[in-house]
Amino acid sequence: MSTEESAGQPDAGQQAGELPQDAQPADDGEHALPDPTLQMHVFHLASQVSMALGEMENPLTREKQVDLTAARFLIDTIGMLETKTAGNRTDEEEEYVSGVLANLRMAFVRKSGGQ
Image (cartoon, rainbow, N blue to C red; front, top):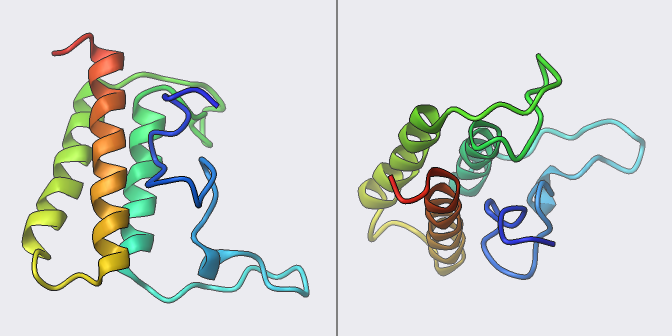
């Protein structure tokens, strides 16, 4: 897996594009709705960043498109959440948010040429 593919990945425990454990399909094939968590919210924002960086297909257009302005906005939004929730996160949430944010920032720099 390339480093760009791992942009939304906090650490080794989760594959790119893989939902957190509590969001996996139920055994009967139905999709269980996960509890609304900080990690789930960050995961959704990180998925949007991956689309904006052209790493994932836009599900509506079925094309990969690069929109660095949108990517920067979404990364800054995750950074704002990190700041606003400081002191209120569990260790697991802390590791997840900081890992995702670091990977997304590195992916943005690679894609933008350091802009």
